[in-house]
Amino acid sequence: MFTGSLVALVTPMDTKGNVDHVSLKKLVEYHIANGTSAIVSVGTTGESATLDHHEHIDVIKRTIDYADGRIAIIAGTGANATKEAIELTHRVENIGVVGCLTVAPYYNKPTQEGMYQHFKAIAESTALPQILYNVPGRTSSDIKPETVGRLAKIKNIVALKDATGDLSRVYPTRKLVGPDFKLLSGDDSTFLDFMILGGDGVISVTANVAAKAVATVCQLAANNQIQEARTLNDTLMALHHNLFIEPNPTPVKWACAKLGLMQDATIRLPMVSLSASSIPAVEQALKEANLL
Image 1 (cartoon, rainbow, N blue to C red):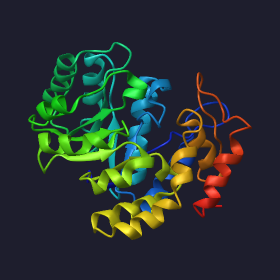
Image 2 (image 1 turned 180 degrees about the horizontal axis):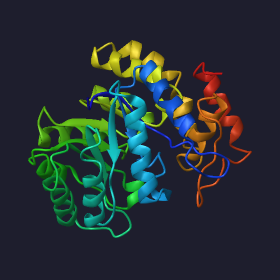
Image 3 (image 1 turned 135 degrees about the vertical axis):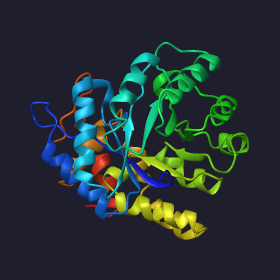
Image 4 (image 1 turned 45 degrees about the vertical axis):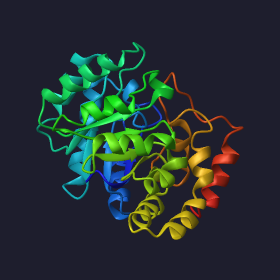
């Protein structure tokens, strides 16, 4: 469930900025058909920061309904206020999610002890499995391996999404958490090496447009078919980089619309549409991945 290719799903919107439910259903079907292990609904890539609470829960519920038990759904329930994160977690407890992705508190910059207490309080408020999400480039808070090790002792904290891109952290983190705790890369450009070093999979942005390829790379890596995995991943490297040519999820929403996976690339302010100067790089990356 928490291994292989998990997609950090975009939230499609129409030209007026409302959630596009038709395209959302189409995206869910795309991932079911192309071997994605699980969908992460309303994380960073799903624009959690600009959806209100009603929209946030509604998108998760609709994603579950569209999936109809055919693919696991993980809910993004993080917040920089512990109370708010607990409230979001409680709102998804009985709707069919298999777990929650909980981002490190952003902006307020807690200490390691503060982050430990934050995640501990959330986990103890629910029976749902919890995936810690470390993305210091966005949050300015870094969950250190030692803190992950402490948190891994809590029964329902079961995995870490590590979006640092720092491969030197994989081994010491694995040593601290033990073999049953899942380590997931949150950095597409390094995820294969992350898996080779002991990771269990990836929560991927690239999988939004290259679901089958990312899932195949993960399966090859899990089977220790490393050269085959590298050969396929090489075709995705331009995507791994150029989907971040501007802040995520702007480029990947443009790419999804370009491929006809959703009707429009609309993104909510303060994020803006992909600039004309960046379009050729994303388009070329899609061609190199044999998607155009």
